[in-house]
Amino acid sequence: MFWNKSVETMGPAELASHQLKKLKETVQQVQKIPFYRARFEEAGLRPEAIQSLDDLQKIPFTKKQDLRGGYPFGFLAVPLSKVVRIHATSGTTGKPTVVGYTRNDLETWSDLIARNLTMIGLGEGDVFQNSVNYGLFTGGLGLHAGAEKAGLTVVPAGTGNTRRQIEMIRDFGVTAIHCTPGYALHIAEVAEEMGVTLDSLKTGIFGAESWSETMRRELEDRLELSAYDSYGMSELFGPGVAFECPEKDGLHIWHDSYLVEIIDPKTGEVLGPEERGEMVVTPLVKEAMPLLRYRTGDITMLMEDGCVCGRMKKIARITGRSDDMLIIRGINVFPSQIEDVLLGLPEVGDQFMVYVDRKNHLDEMTIEVEMSREYFSGELQDLARIQKRVMGVLKDTLELRTTVRLVEPGSLPRFEGKTKRVIDRRGDLI
Ligand code: ADP
Ligand code: ZN
Image (tube, rainbow, N blue to C red; front, side, top):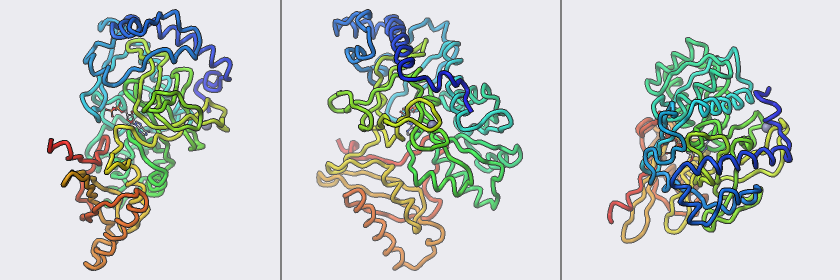
């Protein structure tokens, strides 16, 4: 099923000419923002110099730091009176960035989300529970509007009170849910504690943080649903930027609305398909807050092959954000790698917390891991054996020695929004 078949299946030539037209418009639109006027001037670049898609590479990147410099409204290309809504980033990596939307922007955004929901077979007849924060976070009102547009019956559940969330799913016959993968796991956990099943639930839309294939299997098994990856970021409207189709092999990104480049994060060099790097996006449809070559910090690649569903080319699952990456004694570690290891070990649960310290000038990583209920009541010597085993598997995968501390099931914090897995205390000493 398609929401807008002719656009979603646009061929390469038509797509390129559409992108160029929109790129030229965007280059004009950003001239209303003092930051970009100054940028173009510094680079000795006139807006008219952008005459082909390749000319995009003449334009300097825009970084999160630049947006922070314009806090709160410095990046608006329209007067505030034309902005009908604002949202903000979650502030995962620092001061939040404020984003604005015109009335047109809200229509464009909800249309993109409607494409995604239709792509996975959702529409009229579905009852959709949106279990994310409804405040400044884009996933609340954003997905809500897209789901209404696609004809779903929306339950604006927000976050919190997990038992009540479970009751709502059961009472309203909810067929699809949207939340972070971490919170979905918590819902599964509480439902198990309550001794209830969520029979009506068929579809899970999980996003806002990176999650692995192992996590997908875990969620699909425990919640008995089909789990889809949803990617977005506030600066690019919010959710709806890229989304899995039923193939579940990469995410369709809407190239008519987002011009995608993958670069080497160190050198800025543009990489080819199937080469992993940082995704840089030039949104082509934003009115209130247009951006050029925005460095997302997210690591992925453009996939070469088309998809059986006929839609535009995909990007691979985001393996992490460059900011998430820990450098421990010179070795790169993503929290998602740790999660993947733990999910594969029956002795431990799926909750963990990483502490990084610097002792005698050396980085030390300690991981608190919840045991699985099944193994928790075991003998002490069993605990020592399990601890050793977890440390061994982590060492093999990460190529790094870590200390593992086993903790009681249910004792680590659960998160309704983005999961916080790392407490880096190295900076505290300086
Ligand atoms: P913040 O950048 O403060 O977290 P946002 O709420 O705008 O604010 O979050 C956007 C970021 O969330 C993305 O840049 C990306 O790192 C992460 N993210 C969103 N969806 C996914 C996903 N499906 N997989 C991996 N990471 C994701
Ligand atoms: Zn597809």
